Length: 238
Image (cartoon, rainbow, N blue to C red):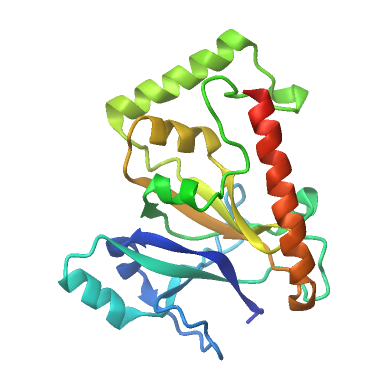
């Protein structure tokens, strides 16, 4: 088994989603102190070149059973993942072109309150009706009429039908400089869900690797700077 890494955040996930996952056969030494730890499996989003490995529960079955018995809706979960890269590879987790070569996803989707994602500051871009679908890549550029139409259509759909679980938000673990979880895909859906008062959305988790322990203090500093710059650019686009 490859090195086990852990999410930078603890997520309040729907109890029934986590309880549905089977206990892991993996034996991991020195687990974190979190009461519930979910190990995501292996699923390629856009290719069928690997056998799907299901998500499993590393720790916390008794706590989950207790939550079910008391009618608890959400429960804090630390997400674990097997590193997809070698220990000495500090580049692949932070360089986009390399990162997507190794990215694998959780086998399941999970439900979470969108406000929690906003509170954890996982969004790299804060989308609004004003800056919707403004992309730096010319390939994806839309005129103002097209942008507003797309945003309003998404809003109407969500108000009418609620959040569509077929399109889960994508949270990449340790995406930012190999140390900080961020929302990878779904920024428009995220903002519209909050605007529409949606209280429950679906998410999937993906991961590549994590920065080496000795490098993490510097990576955390760079990650904060990176996120601040992205948020500034997002506001300027509004």
